[in-house]
Image (cartoon, rainbow, N blue to C red; front, side, top):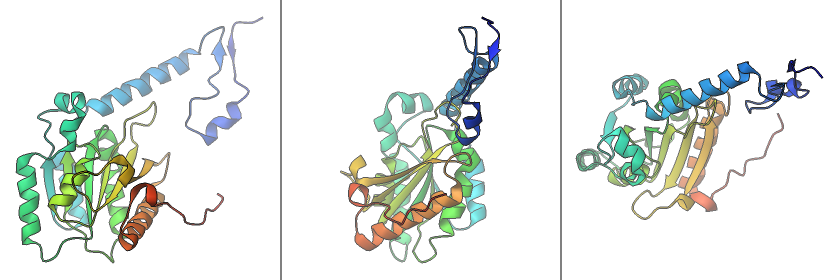
Length: 251
């Protein structure tokens, strides 16, 4: 029996998924090309986790969309602390908290919704898709009072509670880089919470994940997030009690 390269019979399915299928084999091992692709994807995932957020570039991109942009920090003093102590990324730095409260005090009325862009665990995803997703989402929220755009550095999902509460928003949405898998370093996640503030848990949030060109396309994701915002504000709830119950269409 030949020990040369053997194509996998599932090869025809590879164009329908980004999952690692139909890798083939060379003897008893993976082909060299697949081992190298695995190493590359692993390196890109590690780079995404450790890459710092280019806040200056992101602020410029958000300002180009229009409106006020506020830059805030979590309590994590640096990226290493952020990765080692997740709770530090779930709380606002005192200076950032004062900034947001001052902004809320100067506003004519509390916002219906505050949109937050954050690094999460993949600054790469934010750099590649963050501003475009914010633009898509804002174009669907014209009927609401939208607060200032917030760029959050070293932020975990729950930081939306402190941010939304400080700005007195009825609803908060945080768009942030998801923990990268192999080949998905550019994936964003969106989390929605109604009445953000202390005591909220993951059960109070709605999540839309795998937002990226090769996953859930940005316009489709924005449609879903906007629908959830509409439902949350009209029904005064979010999380496990709020479902995306739109009629499903077959592709």
